[in-house]
Length: 367
Image (tube, rainbow, N blue to C red):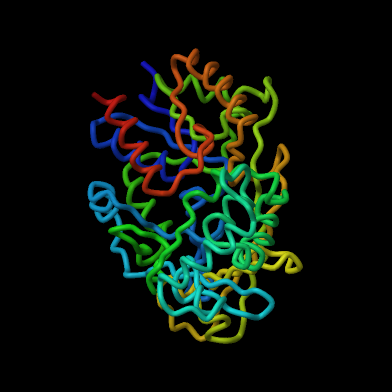
């Protein structure tokens, strides 16, 4: 008999949730991760008493009562509401786009006036069937907002001009004709008190975890330890990129401690002009209403991904979706392995969707 029922590759949310569920059913699990810490990209690290989101801002939000109750078993969540602002050459605008944004941009005060101005700009642009992100954005919020608050930011984030990006990227863009500046239209929202790492630690209680282990470098030996493998790494890397590499965007972070108690007055400030090299600045203490005497900020720089870099955002265009389908067919032939999570499924997943997917996988595996 092999020492473990499940080898779980990746100690992020998908792996941790699956491991917790499997252990609760009496399964023997080994969780490995090539990093030196658990929690994957939601990892938070204490610096000056502040929980720093090492891999970018993660704000938990969901409409699923099941998921909200589930995470509530491992952490108490605060009342943080995501209300980012945009800085365009020193002018500050509310995000998501709402009546505050429209008033600052055009001086309008009623929803009818805002809708009329957007319609006027849409008509002037002559857009009827948006063919790319630029046209989709103009059809949603008009040319002025597109030029100031979308064009530069999006081009930096994706490394491509907006007229070369698919329209679907921005179709979920929140546009509100109210003064509500809550970015997520979700029933439940917040940040776990004490950070995400502590939450994932509780999920993994009683489960053996080995860090600094590269599964793909030791695959044969590690596979021999368990009956089944739950793989949450990149699906193309698993197959040695034999069909070619899927495309991702990567992110580089510059984090520094500042000798001030409040740097920018908000957790998230997007820099939407093309000239500023970073996309946004995160001030971590504001996620948990911190009162520490110092503060920690992170500047985020979007970058083109290459093999060896950390993949963040899948580029789910037609070309990459077709390549992923071919890898998915290969994955279907791996009878011992189940692929899951953001990288294993080549999907941009919000945290609640990762948890839903992991719970569904556990129900299927453990039935």
